Image (spheres, helix red, strand yellow):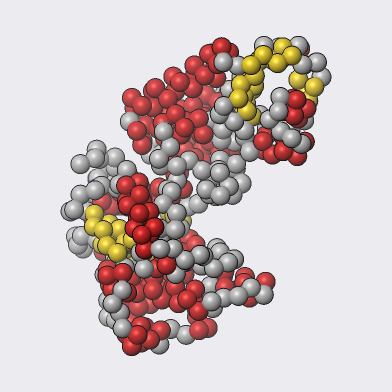
Amino acid sequence: MKERLFKQENWVEHALTHNVERVITDEELRARIVSGKQLRIKFGVDVTNPLIHLGHAVNLWKMREFQEAGHKVIFLIGDFTTRIGDPTGKSKTRPERSIEDIEKDALLYQEQVTKVLLNDSRVFEVRRNSEWYGNMSLDTFLKLCGKITHARLIERDMFQKRIKEGSEIYMHELLYPILQGYDSYVLESDLTIIGSDQLFNEMMGRHYQTLFDQAPQSIMTTVITAGLDGKEKQSKSLGNFIAITDSPEEKYGKIMTLPDDLIITYYKVYTFIDSEQIKEYETQLRGGVNPRDIKMKLAKDVVSLYHGEGEAEQAEQGFVRMFQKRDVSADAKDVVMIPGITIIEFLREVGRADSNAEARRLIDEKGVRIEGETLNDVNLVLGKEDDGKIINVGKRYFYKLKF
């Protein structure tokens, strides 16, 4: 069994507040916990993409807190609902997937979630919703549909958005919240921990549980933070994420590209470092400490959480060798430039960008570093004072300036 991470004597207050946006309802959940019953925590996923990043892991760590207190996570693989596709945040209908592909990705998903969750049958159970939907009669399903109105379903924000845009809404998309809601009834869910974008669907779970004389599940929504670009939430399509499967070195390096104004936010959300220590770091940053120094502590703490202190130490040493001690100089290509060249011109000159726009994008996406420091200034001018410095573009290209 994995090492315990949470203090048990006051776990309830921490579990109900740390990284929590809201609880529906706080009173219900506290009463359930006090009752001494082992809570059944519904964790449902559609396996449209098996990649899990640190943003997803916020919910996993919250479930881990409950597991360490003896409560059980029901990992529900939506092998049936994946074939329909949750319309949340989607402007177009998702393409259909084969059963074989769904099962393959489900196994990858399970492998990743158990890097955080305790994989012990006493506190972890795997289910698939094809167990009940695969053999459900049309008569039974129509009765479920008869328990909800079109007006209520169409309230969903993404449906309203499509209506305003004149986009199509297909019937299977309208029915998706019914299926997700009924899952809660079948699993006898006491609690579900979700991002706020899933609130509508999980409120549907409370609706069906109440209809069928079952105590409605509590719902906990967690905070959502910006990705590595400091703008949108972590997303594979945007490339601004840290994946659970990233190596210690990759996790460390990615965190070092984080905008300085997100250091404390990431500390609060993605680590379990003592709050007083985080306040001290915040004070140090306001007092003029180099943000890189605090960022290195953050990177090490995050890597330690997923890989252990030994791996974190090695990742830090590798970073120091690569960027601070400039051990890359042996591999860096010497480039001779005229003083006064802009960084945009430099990127085009060395062949890393075909246009000024592409060069700016590289910088905006934190893909350019000088002496290990992420470059944010697209108007930077390089001069004789930069002679001998190492500029790296992405993970593979290193250049040593000579003027």
